[in-house]
Image 1 (cartoon, helix red, strand yellow):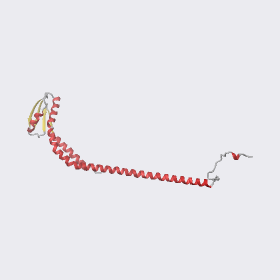
Image 2: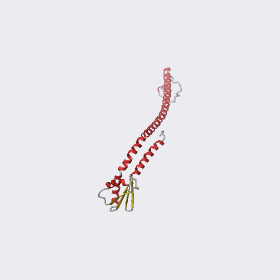
Image 3: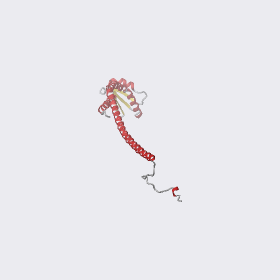
Image 4: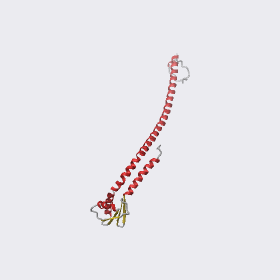
Length: 198
């Protein structure tokens, strides 16, 4: 009697062949195949929807950033434009006095520098007659310079001329005030010219 029926066979089996499965096993295999196809289709749909959602979200985020940027620049420009009259008024009210008050300090600093580089020189200071007393009171003590002060009505009240060792220097705080006004004017004009879309 042969025992071949007891031994394992290694022959290739065609999966399409009916291996004699019971109807329950066949139904289970069919349901499993249907489930796997449905699962795969659902997964593919979910992936596609996520990609579309991500693209839409990126576009919406970019638009929101653009809107925020526009809003910021618009608000910034509006604020700067609204404070322009106040800034201009403050500049006109305070800058001349600040410049005039700093004239004595600038003169003292300039004379100290001259004394360091040209010790023993003769220094002639000319100023508007109305400023002679202020200039004399602003002269630093203990400088190694021979200083004389002369009035000159050709100079403006905020101008001082210093002559020493064939060198001439000028202190003009009015020019500083004019330059400051010009800078402020140019700043506000540049804000007005900027487009609101940033």
